[in-house]
Image (tube, rainbow, N blue to C red; front, side):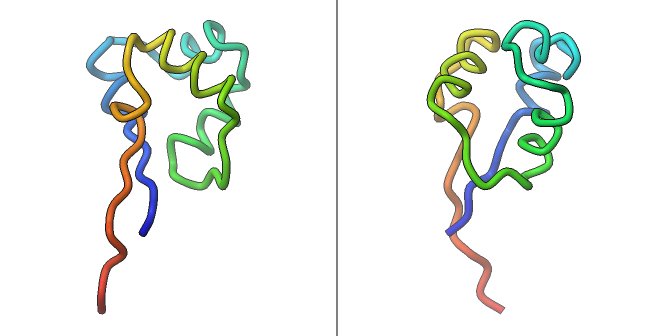
Length: 71
């Protein structure tokens, strides 16, 4: 199983830039970029709440769990 982050889609739907989101939630653009690109290993609940508040969404809109590919 892996976790997919849908930050790109949510930003596009809301017409918001990563820089604007960074300013709203108090997280650096670099850290948001790591999350957006799926390289983050963890996220604090306080950050998740701040992101959901700024993006007017629920955690399930931002994150989803997908089965691992079988090769």
